[in-house]
Image (cartoon, rainbow, N blue to C red; front, side, top):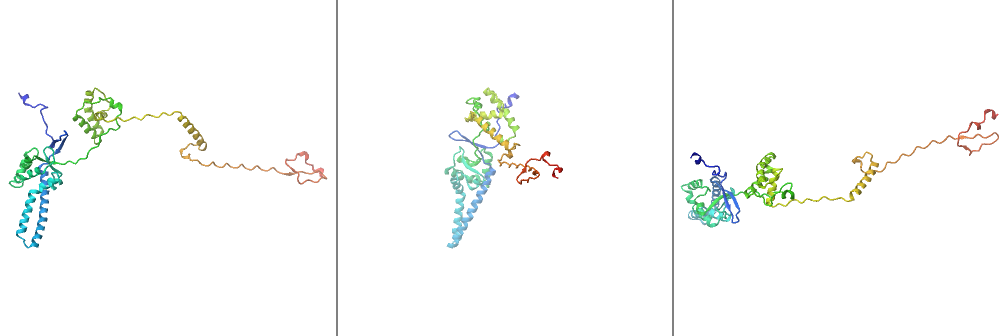
Length: 352
């Protein structure tokens, strides 16, 4: 009997951390809006109270000027101020909530909005109904009844919200995320390895997308650890294998969302042009090496060839006069080009 009294694990229902209003549109699209609590709504009410007080002072000043001009300071001024106070107290919220889609200056400052329980926009009739019971929520003073009712209601509604069928939600103006893409993009071979329609539910696909979007904000080791916990489940379900768990989850998401595979560009085949190109490059390299023996790329700029040094002039042969025979005059134009032989040189005895 004791075992039967203990609840099973499946029967345990954990409450959400945040109080959220689930709204489903006619197109079966669900939205979750965080509900505004008493503290945030009280801050918005104080802001609206200050705005109403400022408007009342400005109008009372104008009424006082009119009373001074007309000379009636008591009756006219007092009656006009009471009428202005009544209008501000009863129609301030109706006017702003009808013009600003369920927002007053205080709600707009605190990022709050009044909507219907089914997600529809607030109408003028809804605003009138919820504000007619504001006096009942104010009893006995300081919205004591309204605070007690909001504290006990799971949607933080006061009496006026229960009658009009409205709730006050927090506007979350988050940024719209772009389309999730894989890097590098999936190839046709990778996508064909998975079924055309992977057996993945909508909740599982949303969880995979959330995991892929959080990869840039997680440590690499943590990413692999989380992927290794989930990837074997899908691999066993699809009867397939994988080498990279993170890549495998990305391929499941891409296949389920219908992403197109990347187109592989074929490699060009060079027919004949390569040899001619290599031949020109070889001739150009040989010509460059003739002017640049070192082969350094910094010396590949064409320079004019250095002028060749002129050869040194050869020394002129010594010129010796030819000695004439005795009794003959020597000719001035006879110049010996070769050194005289010893036989042609007369001895000193022949001169005597």
